[in-house]
Image (cartoon, rainbow, N blue to C red; front, side):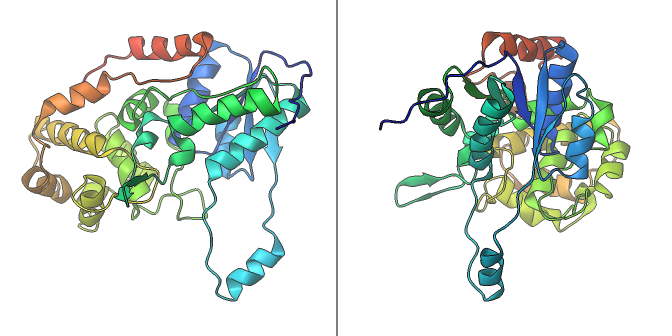
Length: 322
């Protein structure tokens, strides 16, 4: 109630959080090419995150180390359940601290429009695994940051107006990141398990825009030739419970399947097992209009004009449909 925000001098620079995934890599590529001054902020960075951040040369990265409390690890060994950490919210508060320490003015994240869609309704309320990546959280934290923490600072997502499918299309224009990025949450190494909803979602939303050879090289296999992909796909497509992972919306999954099927058929080849199943059993896959609508969409956001202009230029330079 009586807190006073920090009112020190801030430079007009952004601090971009980097996790090693596709969304933040795209943000690095677009902001780097625009000539804007920014630095990368990383928490316990993976090799993928470090390699992506290395493409930013005008400012040194801010690297934060976090260690889990030993008492928590002891409780875990004794069988106590793990709680959920709202990781994106955690990074938002860490970013606010770094603004003060290093004099930056903006905490920039790369949370996409897809994160606004929840997973399930429970007792009349929408449950969203990605709430701390959503526009609602972004709006509330941005207001909280300026009012209570750092006067004159901003918190916003650079790719907020875009769906994952649109991000996949733009990301394909940055080959220097294709073999570097990593979004799988299951493996400890910088690799893809190819067996989780996150892997399937990323593979699917890139398939129409990247060669099959390149995707197979990235993921270690063609996920459309694995029967184990089908039950995961059913959840992503809304036929079963949407996975509690950071994945594309149900509409995007349908659209991405339509684009993938069209791509394979254009070669005259037979559909791989997963796409053959999708064409026969997932409603809406035959509607090409859904893909056009999503690829041309531009959602609500809180981007400052100078950052929005970078994003809109990239979209204008890229055809909105295939």
